[in-house]
Image (tube, rainbow, N blue to C red; front, side):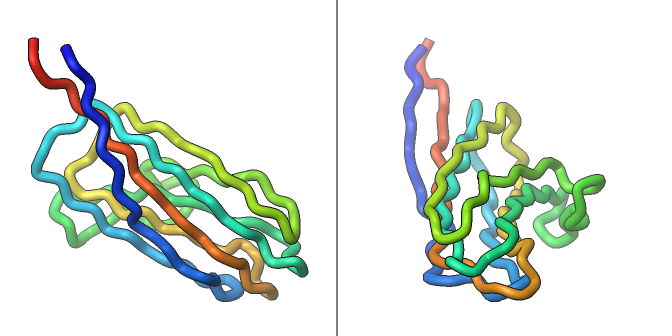
Amino acid sequence: MIREKSYQQVINVSSLTAGGYVDADIDYTKYYKSIAITVRVTYGASATAGIRVYLLTSPDGSNYDSENVEDAFTYFEPSFSAGETRQTTYQLEFMPKHLRIRVRNLDSAHDQGAIKVWITFVEVVGD
């Protein structure tokens, strides 16, 4: 068995407004064994809270999970330190056909800096 990996950047914004969010919708026709989602954020120097990354799924590509910690498929939060850059990776062993990655600024008063999100796909090929 061979594990093949491919990479795709799905979010690349220079800033995120106070309380705002940015989405990336990913639809798959291919089966992947797992995916890793890597998030890099540069927090605003005046920020008092970080970001939360929601992973929302949909059975049809239109109706996604609600954005809250109870209803989302899952979520994670990179560590927070004002004015600093943080990066973290979250691995999913189950890849839904329709996935929305939503990055939410938890700071309602301050913008955040650059946010980048990549997905690493892992598939098994061969015998």
